[in-house]
Amino acid sequence: MLTVEQLESGYGESLVLRGVTLEVRPGQVVCLLGRNGTGKSTLVKSIMGVLKAKAGKISYDGSVLTRKPPGERARSGLGYVPQGREIFGQLTVRENILIGLEASRRRSGDEIPPAAIERFPVLPTMYERRGGDLSGGQQQQLAFARVLAAEPELLILDEPCEGIQPSIVDDIRDVIRSIKSDGRTAILLVEQSLEFVRSVGDYVYILEKGSVAWQGEMEQMNDEVVRRYLTV
Ligand SMILES: Nc1ncnc2c1ncn2[C@@H]1O[C@H](COP(=O)(O)OP(=O)(O)OP(=O)(O)O)[C@@H](O)[C@H]1O
Ligand SMILES: [Mg+2]
Image (cartoon, rainbow, N blue to C red; front, side, top):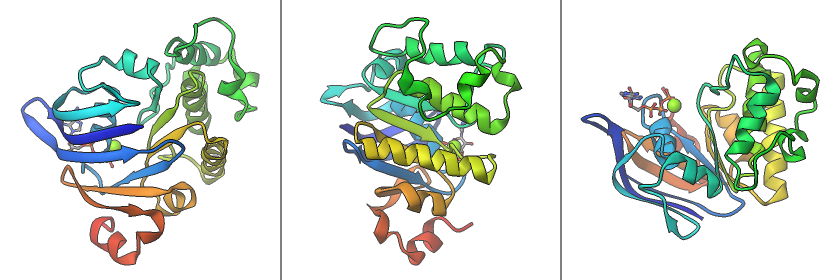
């Protein structure tokens, strides 16, 4: 459903991604790993169109996205939770979720769809609170709810567990598993924790210096691979 071919991308003159090829199939949880600074966030930003590709091709469901603006990519079914969450601190929880609905292919409105909040029972109790007043874990749940409001077919998550306490990490794991078992949404997950990745992932790509250094089924990622490409 998503294919990235020979993608080159970077900031200004500097090239970060040096020909990345990757694929996400329907219903799959694909994990993107690699040490700090290897280009994981740059890759997902390029897939979403937040960053323009310098070369290569991104296609989704048969249409080429490489030159399309981010809004159009979102409407074609891509949902994105950026690293650091980036919810709107000044807006209420309700407003934050409704902004996600705007990205939907379906009509926008002022009604929060069940798909957004069914997995986060705590959020409806906080609708009128400002996003910025939520705890880190609650903000992560809000970021999820905002993107799920648009009912994406491919969910791109950039380090959803970063800086979050273990009990909320377990909640996020449950959310990912439940999305996976529904079978309607594929996930591209950037994550540092191997334990987390092993508990949800199907397939792995490991980046090194802006290129894919290793790829394979989750079970094939043995200690040798971990030592070589991930241990710091
Ligand atoms: N806005 C930016 N302007 C210039 N260079 C950037 C920018 N963002 C990232 N970089 C550089 O691009 C390279 C890849 O960064 P990127 O954020 O993609 O890494 P990452 O794999 O996501 O790392 P981390 O695991 O720390 O999140 C790094 O050398 C980084 O310094
Ligand atoms: Mg990153």
